[in-house]
Length: 187
Ligand SMILES: Cc1cc2nc3c(=O)[nH]c(=O)nc-3n(C[C@H](O)[C@H](O)[C@H](O)COP(=O)(O)O)c2cc1C
Picture 1 (cartoon, rainbow, N blue to C red):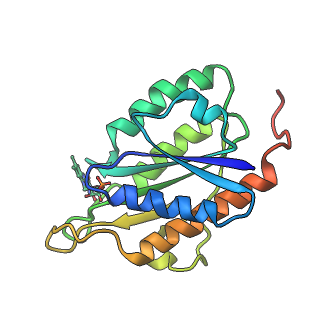
Picture 2: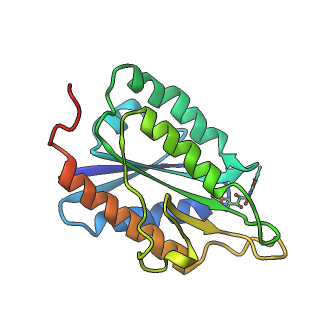
């Protein structure tokens, strides 16, 4: 059995809903199981015992949530020193308000986390543009869920965005099956 850990932070439940959909996608692939854990609770063992890691963040002030960044700067950075995450499969997802239609920061938040994932030696799984519901919640970096309407009311992430999140989870689970156990980088 392969294990994919999904690490996320969430204040109002939107990123958490996406995390659950990503987990459903992981669990839809035979021989892979998901492990959901909040950024403030994840341990080094959670990561080293995983074949894949997926990181989800709300967009805060145009970029990554501080709890997700703290997890990267504490739990992940210790493992970076020991090269412990090299070759594990990884991906990202985010939820932003999209306030006033434009919003801002989904892509920067994703790229910020992906930059860390690359630094950690992990293998990034993108989101192909022909994925179902892509136009309602996909960027090639991963799924995003917009939670506010044009009047800045929180209406929650759409079913389409949740569907894209599920596809991303399944893609990452399949990538994990293909990669895990095969040495990619020198030990
Ligand atoms: C402190 C704070 C800053 C935020 N900044 C942004 C932002 O820069 N861009 C954006 O689109 N949404 C922004 N939002 C809205 C959240 O990203 C959005 O509501 C998201 O869906 C929240 O996810 P959650 O329900 O998992 O907490 C912000 C929310 C908070 C609380």
